[in-house]
View 1: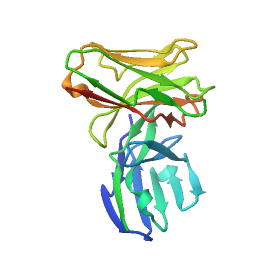
View 2: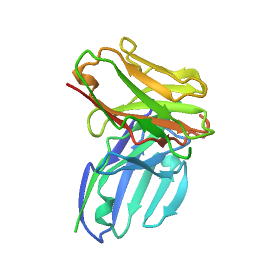
View 3: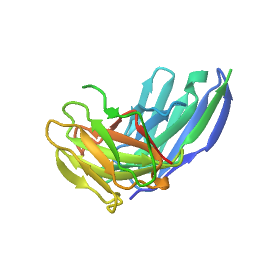
Amino acid sequence: GIQVEQSPPDLILQEGANSTLRCNFSDSVNNLQWFHQNPWGQLINLFYIPSGTKQNGRLSATTVATERYSLLYISSSQTTDSGVYFCAGPSGSRLTFGEGTQLTVNP
Amino acid sequence: GEEVAQTPKHLVRGEGQKAKLYCAPIKGHSYVFWYQQVLKNEFKFLISFQNENVFDETGMPKERFSAKCLPNSPCSLEIQATKLEDSAVYFCASSQSRQDNEQFFGPGTRLTVL
């Protein structure tokens, strides 16, 4: 199955700052998902993005499948953005998760 | 429904007791997946179903773990004789088709084995 690496492992921001999270994967993928796990443990779908760029409010994501990476952009961060951000790619039908980026946004 | 539902939210068992977790996939989704999140940032795939048929069970510890998806019933994951290391959050996910493979996750069941 594929290997998924995320960076940075930890990120601390002041409210209002922008950030970029990266996900590298070891093999070509036909889909990639980004999730936010909030402090209560809920896993929230952010993007399903096999390739190209998508935007949803202050969040956007870009996947460059040929170069095997995806980026998640968070603009004007808010304290509610805190939590762990995971990317996941397919190994067969199952998802293989990266180890996540722990984001803390301070007021 | 339009969300994956999981019950119970929390489950506490003494070591050696049985634990049973339930999952109702999104209506119209034919694939169901179970994942275990043991350490905070580590997800382990357990098993997947296509309708009521096991699709991939290569992640299942077969000695004590079993799972079913029966028609017109929630899917279930059962752990016989729980061990301390089974303490984890168990997530269920569903997807419309394997090829599409966008998976939607339920809120999880937190299992604590004492």
